[in-house]
Amino acid sequence: MADQTAEDKAISGQPKNTLIADFDPPQKPKRNKFAIACAILACMTSILLGYDIGVMSGANLFIQEDLKINDVQIQILTGTLNIYSLIGSGLAGRTSDWIGRRYTVVLSGVIFFVGAILMGVAPGYAFLMFGRFVAGIGVGYGLMISPVYTAEISPTLSRGFLTSFPEVFVNLGILLGYVSNYAFSKLRPHLAWRFMLGIGALPAIILVIGVLAMPESPRWLVMQGRLGDAKRVLNKISASKEEAQLRLDDIKEAAGIAKDLDDDVVPVPKKSRGEGVWKDLILHPTPAVRHILIAALGIHFFEQASGIDSVVLYSPRIFQKAGIKSYDHKLLATVAVGFVKTIAILVATFFLDRFGRRRLLLTSVAGMVFSLVCLAVGLTIIDDHHDKVPWAIALCITMVLLNVAFFSIGLGPITWVYSSEIFPLRLRAQGVSMGVAVNRLTSGAISMSFLSLYKAITIGGAFFLYAGIAAVSWVFFYTMLPETRGRTLEDMEVLFGKYHRWRQAKAVLEQSKQGDANENKSQVK
Image (cartoon, rainbow, N blue to C red; front, side, top):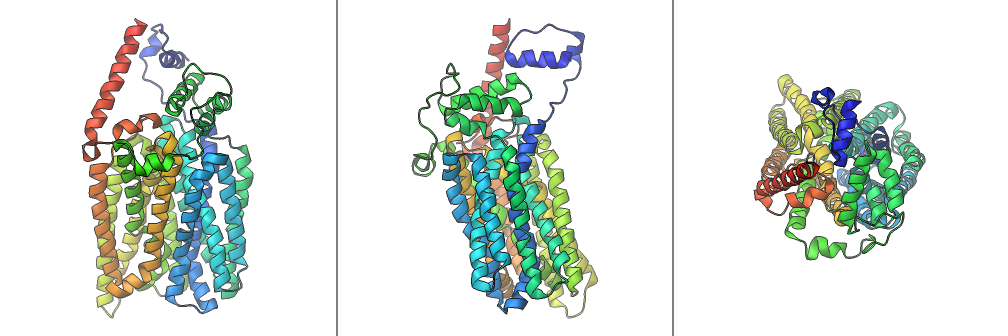
């Protein structure tokens, strides 16, 4: 109790009485359970994308058999959802600034629900493509809004833990998709794929119902001048009222609202409805905003360009190329991929705020380069031998599992954590939507080209190419991305603007913080 009193007085700037208990090791701050619950509900939108990715890896085999379509049509069917999601992510930034983050989550779930039903009842290829178009818009909305909402409700010390949840739920969705493939694989082909795709409507229903318990983002409320509502939300998602007040003051400063304005509803310089944002973000950005944009778009591009969708979406074909012929064995192997991916992302959520973004990211990408090279070598050896090569088959299976594990422990979750926390408040919604657009466009290009690519340069050559891209990404991350662990969202602009010399900006920020701390100490004395 004494520890908590001392901590509260330190936060509020009041002098404190020195007690014996004050010399005890400081207690680790507790995670806010309400904030965690809100993050879980918001991030359920990511299950929708994950389920689609996982289920299509098996469903496309049944679709091809039932509808009698070729590999090019399968590539287009599989990858176009990512292209369609560009529409949703492009609209989501403006929508979330207009109607709020919370109702944008609802909209995402409703649109995907309609798309899943349309895919499940599709009588032919054209109607199936239309269903994927609708579902893709819902996925785009969800991909943009869940990390933005989660970052804006998260306390600073838990932001990495909570904003990694979207990737956790993507992985959970992938695992559910793989399990669905195996569960419905015994049905006749024309029924199997319809059940696999249509059952994706269930998470959307749960999402729409659950979101009714979520509060609106306090940062969006402040941007609308609704300080009273923002204060009530911050009191629920912060460790103490003092912390809530500090967070409110930071958000007010970022929104251009004077500190002495404390009414429930106050005028704001300009309500955030997206006006003028594109000008500040693209046409005339400051050096810091330009660096932030390059970092955000770069990490989204490299996340997908390193080939993770090829591994996940086409894992049954990869296992078939590696020498696994039994259909049941291929599907069970994909379930193992989903299981390993999910376990790895759960581990990552607890390390993001402990070890920092950069350390995990660089370790993750280095592991991906290693696993992709080994996978390429194994597949090349198998291609060059007419007989079975047991050790090469074992190598390929191991490297697929290792690749998804390394991806999920770093690059996967950090892409969404990083891009959602570095943009300034007024530019955040549109900035994140641009990152999502790059992510989905790259993902669509990779997933729509994999079958043609490996036929052109061999399957081993395709993974050698992905390994080279991953190696380039490691250099980009090492030089361009500063560490953001423990920084408030309002501090981010100070870290950016010097590009590969970002460590100088970090030193300036540390010096400024130290100066503020010394000033507070002198005032107390």
